[in-house]
Structures are given as C-alpha cells and as structure tokens.
Image 1 (cartoon, helix red, strand yellow):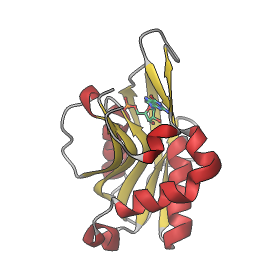
Image 2 (cartoon, protein in one colour):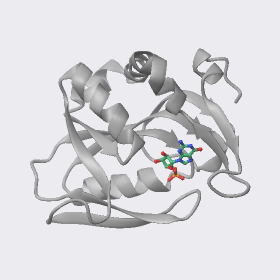
Image 3 (cartoon, protein in one colour):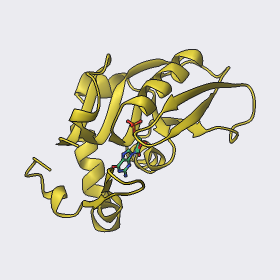
Length: 172
Ligand code: 5GP
C-alpha cells in the first residue's frame, strides 16, 4: 500500500490467496465498523456532473452488490445487476473474461429501459471484470458513464478507456 488513507489500517493484505503469488486485498474488515465512511468516500470520488447523470449503479457480483446497494439506498438512484452466469432469467447478454486468477462469465438482463450506468466494484485488478461489464451494459443498451471502485491496483491493468473514480490506489 502506498497511500496514507486511514482505510489502509483496516484492510488486510493476505499473501498467496486464493492462489500462490496472488496478494489478496481483504476489504471486508472495512464493512464491519466503517461502512458508512466507505460509502461517503465512494460518493466523494464521483464528480458532481457525473453523479447528476447517473440513473443506476451497475452492481458487479459479489462485493460490488454491497457497495452499489448502499450507494443506491443513500442516493435514491437505481441498480442494475451484473451477475455470474446462470442466475438471471432470459433474455440476458453474456460475456466471458479473464480474471487475475482464473476466468469467469458474467450476464446482465437485456431488453430493459436503457440507463446511464456507473459501474461499481470493490477492487480493480486486471480490469477484465470491468471491461466485461462494459460490454454487457452496451449489449443491453445502457450507456456506461465510468467505473467507481474502492481500490485500484494500478500496476495490474492498462489505462481504462472510460473514466475511473477511486478512493484507494496500490501498486498491486
Ligand atoms: P479483475 O477482473 O480486475 O482482474 O479483478 C477484479 C475482480 O476480482 C473484482 O470483482 C474483485 O472483487 C476481485 N478481486 C481481484 N483481486 C482482488 C483482491 O485482491 N481482493 C479482493 N477482495 N477482490 C479481488
């Protein structure tokens, strides 16, 4: 960690999880006693004109669900879900992608009213999850305004081709 943000005193970095060589940033201790401060910090990271344009937070399973739910509850905006394969009834858009460790498939409901979506997740690592989520939003007819993540592991991904709003950064 290269940031003096007080959240760093609470985040745990677990070596070799879930696979050898991977440093896993465990943000769950933040949820226990500081969840409102986390939501305050996420909201403060969104420029006002972007916030005003957001219709829905795009919640990426699973930890993105937590933050997007709390953001939606706080702001009165909506949520659209980016889920693991097989959870949503048809019609769905479907996209496979590479993870920092392994691969996965995400789905999003198609055929709904188009929305301006700000994607939300806890951590940005390789960017594979986010780019799959962008592809899904576009396939479902939504406009992606950018992405909001608590922690950006800056060395693990190329520059994104959309605005990125973050609270914490680490080299990964
Ligand atoms: P990416 O697709 O950018 O490589 O990985 C991001 C996704 O994997 C996010 O959904 C995030 O929750 C999860 N992830 C990747 N690395 C970590 C990590 O170190 N800690 C946690 N908590 N999640 C991670």
